[in-house]
Amino acid sequence: MCGIIGIASNKPVSVNIINSLKKLEYRGYDSAGIATLSDGFINEKKCSGRVDELEKILFKTPSNGNIGIGHVRWATHGTPSTINAHPHSTEEVSVVHNGIIENSDELKKKLENRGLAFKSQTDTEVITLLITEALKESNPLNAVFTTIQKLKGSFALGIIFKNFSNIIIGARRGSPLAVGYSEQENFLGSDSYALKSMTNKISYLDDGELCVLTKDRVDFYDTEQKKINKKIHLVSDEDNTSNKGSYKNFMSKEIFEQPIAAKKCISEYIDSLKKDINIYNFPIDPKLINKIILVGCGTAYHSCLVAKYWFEELTNVEVEIDIASEFRYRKIKFNKKNLYIFVSQSGETADTAAALDICKKNNVKTCSIVNVVESTIARNADWVLPIHVGPEIGVASTKAFLGQLIVLYILSLKISSLRNNISSDFYSLSIENLKKIPEKLKKCLETETNIQLMAKEFLKAKGSMFLGRGSSFPIALEGALKLKELSYLHAEGYPAGEMKHGPLALIEEGLPVIVIAPKDKYFEKTLSNMQEVIARGGKIFFITDNKKSLISENIRSGIRVPFLGDLLSPIMLTIPLQLLAYHVALLKGCDIDKPRNLAKSVTVE
Ligand code: F6R
Image 1 (cartoon, rainbow, N blue to C red):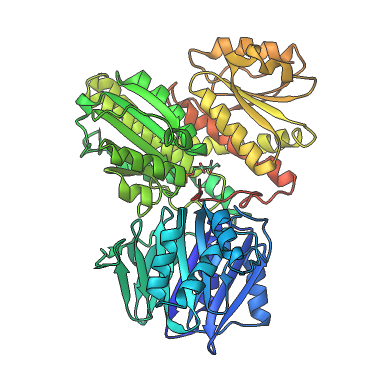
Image 2 (image 1 turned 30 degrees about the horizontal axis):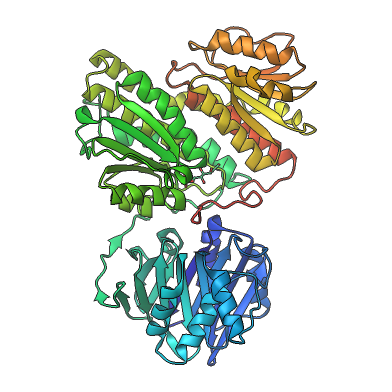
């Protein structure tokens, strides 16, 4: 993953680099570094840990210079340590890198055979040494061109040069890179989000392209080294919400702002006057869609899983779902009448972006459902449906999952209505029901006090299970994912009916089992599966929207969310599970917004 920033300016850049790195921490937070050019030297400072640590170092020994690069790292090659932190510099060159160089071992051996020594265990250092070598015979642009031709894998690079003290070179293949423009200052960044506090004018490099920045101009080059022009996008400044307000952390803020986020998302798609859904310009006539294929990773994949139930219930279209990292390497039979939908909060997830690229190469129609509308996935898809929930900073996805569910539900309703799979009365009623979501979500959040008590019971647990049937099965998966990523407690999500085929062996006296059982056609069956768990000593936490009493001697505790019909129950049932993961993690003293080993935007394979 990793985040990159570069600034060429007429004034000192280190403070703005640090501020941008703080914004980029969602891409990686295990080490950080900066290199500036001052007094004719490359001045490199780096440390393991967060950007705050780097800031402390700069406070003691400031870095001067009007040109510089910075980096936040999510380790791929080599442990998170000061030596492995970027930039990687020689006397001549300093490089920051996002991506993975797949042939780094081979290149390293060649360089070592020529007597060159490596300081770190990273794949990036080969780039620094190759450029340094190439510079002996050519100018910086050619040195970078020659170097990237030798690299296999993915990269976004920011490079500064001791002897060419007014330029930063950027290059990309596979990993995103953006350029920002301002008066007497130009910027390089992993994404527009990092640059937004400095400019709203952004260009995006495409694969294979390079750029050369000085404080007052930017030149772009294509793969053939020809100069090219790039479109300048004016990006919205909608996301100035990156403060926690009175909340302890971003995650609790994002959980509790879900009623507002849902309202915003719904209002973008619902035309209350016409009682219709504002979704137009389908890349394929909805009546002619043969199959819908939904692709995502992690939480986004879980939203695809829920959507499969909706599309199947509401439309007569066949639906397939896939995990992006699997989809991209499978031998897919592409069909021009299929619609391929990619779901991604960040819009930068490498596997999802690669899966989308494969579809594009096969000339099939693509749709992206994203939160970041300027992202790579949004820009590359034929059709974009934003989720409009505002920036999500906490690494664990909460309000973005909600937004993905809402947009997918709205899309399934629209397609079913355009294909005449549902009656106009059902369509209007469903639209009315959608509008009730924000108020009902507020009620769901009132379960927090009970969930806090429930969370205490997970502190001594060795593991936990989440069970559900139908569309509650993906919600069980999502509940388990949230709990493990935030609290580091092992959690398994399972279709309740599958327990007897193996996982029942895991149940022992006192194991916490969360049973998600809305009042739908599976309710009675889920209760039977629950009995099988009770009989083996499982401690049941029951989550439902059923109005009937929850009290039973076999149920340790019960949580009731508002009933909003079978179809919308996944949206309601998610909230207590988010709160549960949050409170278990809080009690365990875990880093809520930045769980260990993770990053918000997964821009490597
Ligand atoms: C879990 C989580 C991840 C992401 C996944 C995909 O809480 O946030 O599983 O959902 O990395 O990310 P996006 O949606 O940005 O493609």
